[in-house]
Image (tube, rainbow, N blue to C red; front, side, top):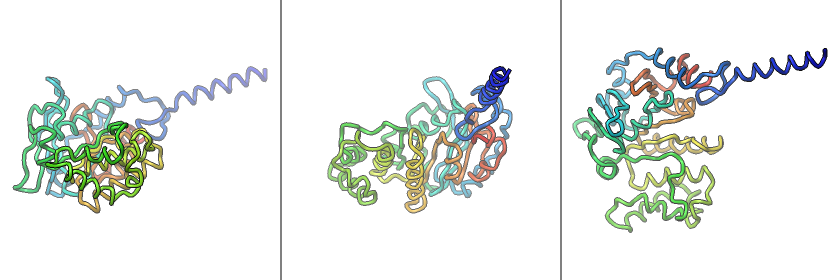
Length: 302
């Protein structure tokens, strides 16, 4: 009888454990939520976001302004008429279920996919230029837009120094690229101490620092940051967000980020957008989205 009771207890414990699952990206929830359920519930909580609200979040002075953007890959449209605004020196974090089109937005801004309609304006006031149909190289050199890719974008068999030089590949001379790299080394002593080391021997946090630093060689105004915390230990995640915070608040960089750790991303960002099926479902300050019960339940694990 004791054995039977023990078996029943184990079964109950196992059933309870099976009902608990990690949330969309952090924490725990009491029931497993499939990707399909997340998408369905996210669509249900979507509200029409007026353009006035989008503009207000960017202090009515956008530095990056997406107007009715439609984009995708080949002939497949992923983003359907997105309006996005972020001011100079602000940060914006895109969150949402898998397949919502978050990275597709970054790709469109940088020139890595097909823009099918709308505008991508970058710059202040009357000086803003429509970069929607520029190439990635043109956007980096002429509009100051840099893209920090997900993990594993460094050249592992090059030294740290050579990786930074590659960040200046659009400069007129190698000497200019080397001079710009020295400015980065002056800012980040941790990299300077490893300048002659092959990139493949760096720790995960150091590799991410190198990826960010390489994007800084061209001194961009806009940083597109794709999953900065992916694959990192917690101590390195804090380091990376501290670096991004410094770039925003000390150097005035405008940051648009996609972050799988939704809680961390919203804690960092001035503005948060929830994308669902290629459309804007919710927009607000980062703090407001952290307090939103639906956002918390679906994306923050609580």
